[in-house]
Image 1 (cartoon, rainbow, N blue to C red):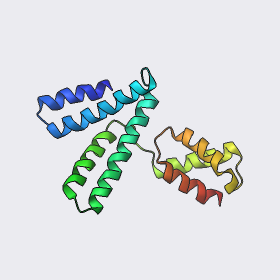
Image 2 (image 1 turned 45 degrees about the vertical axis):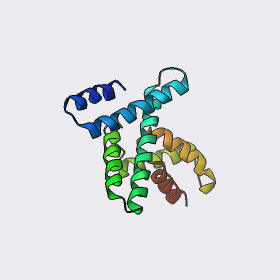
Image 3 (image 1 turned 180 degrees about the vertical axis):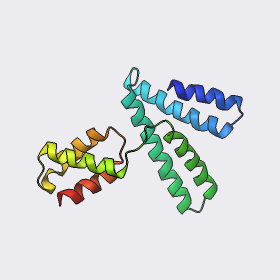
Length: 144
C-alpha cells in the first residue's frame, strides 16, 4: 500500500493523470477493505483486494470490447496492467502442473469425488499466484 502511495506521488509529479487516477482507485479499494476489516490488512488480504480489482478491470475491458467501445476497453486494460505490477508473477504452466500433482499426492485423491479436496490444497500451494479456473482445469483433467 505504501508503494502505491509513492507511485501516486511520482505520477503526479510526472503529470501522468491516467496513472494517478488508476493508482488512486487501487488505493481507495485497499483503504475500503482496511475499514471493512476493522484494522490493518495482511499482505495476503492486500493481494486478494488487488486480484479482485484486476478481475474487475479485465471483465470490464471485455464488456467494453463486446459493446464496441474500444477506448473504454483500452482504459480498463491500462488499469489492469497497472494492477498486475503490484501482484506477484503468475505461475508457469509447468509449475501449476507440479502443484496439481503434489496436491493429488498429498490428499490421496483417486477420482473426481476428491476434486474439492485437491482444489483446496492446490490453491493453498499456489499461494494466489495461479488462476483458479486454470487450476481447476488441470485438476479435472488429471483426476478423470
